[in-house]
Length: 121
Image (cartoon, rainbow, N blue to C red; front, side, top):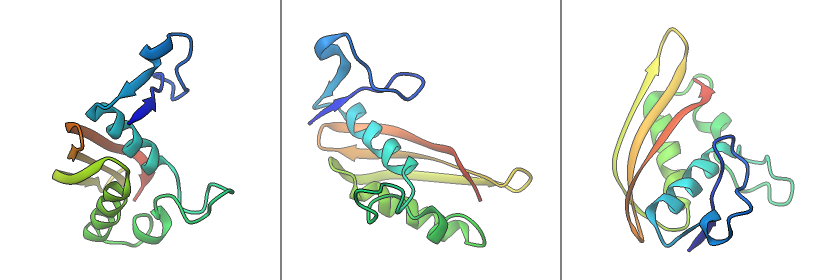
């Protein structure tokens, strides 16, 4: 699997040839998971069936268990993800900030993905 790397600001990397890509490595799948979680369900006009159902399962008056299962289900839909090895989440009641750390098993090995600052709970 070949995935174009993102810069620190979230743009595609250009100008370095093959160094601008992840090729068959866990970090590439991890980046796909992160970008998948950034896309809200219905946000992409070409296919409104893709994206993370943040409003339907995470934001608002939902439980942490529902939020966790919604995000885990989205992670498992990403190409290259085999399973979730571990998943820990927290909600800060003062800031209403949801964050999670997950370790995923991919076709190419294991990698860690941070789910944070995506949305207020």
